[in-house]
View 1 (cartoon, each protein chain N blue to C red):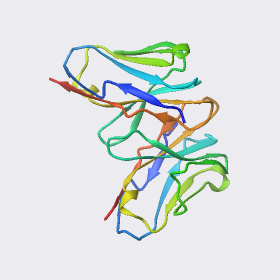
View 2: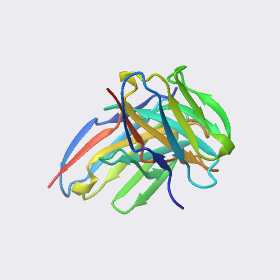
View 3: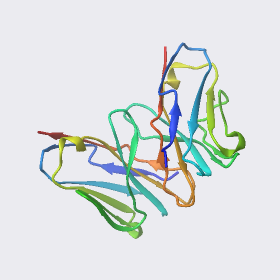
Length: 112
Length: 108
C-alpha cells in the first residue's frame, strides 16, 4: 500500500491569490479528512468526506475555503483570496473500516 | 469538542534515558492515536490504542479509557526520537481532536 500523498508539498503565494491543494488517500480508503496546523499547535479539523459526500465542516472553514472529492477518490482543497492568516500546514488523512487515521506529508502554505 | 491535554509540554533527555508522556482527555472516546511528527511535518503513526497496552520495540503505550488518560513510554531514548509527540482522540469515525503536543529533545 502506498501512503497518503499530497501535492504540492510547499506553496508560496501572494495575498489575494487563489490556491488549490490535492490529496490522494490510501487506495480504497472511503473516509478522507482535512486538517490545518499552525506553528506550535496540534492539527485542527477542517472537513471530512465519506466517499464523495462532505459530511462535516468545521467553523474554521470560512466561505473562502471549499473542498471536493469527486468520485470518492482524490480530494482538493481550495482557498480563495488568501490572507496571511491562512499560512499553515494543511494535512490530509484517510481511513477505512477502523478508526485509525493515516496522514499525508502535508502542504506547507506561505502567504506573503 | 473533546479537550486533550498533554504533559509535559517540553522534555529534554540524555540519550539512553527513559521517559513517560501523558495524555488526558475530557470525554469518552473509542479512538486514541499517538503520533510522532518528524522535522518535515509528517505525522507518523505510533499506536492506535483506544484501550489496553501495546508495545513496539522501545515504545509502549497504555490507555485507561475509564479514567480518560493514556501514557506513552519511551525507553533507552535515541537522538532520532527527538520531535513532537501528539495524542489525538475521536468518537467513532469522526474527526480527531489533538493535544498541543510534547516536544522531546534527546541530547547525545
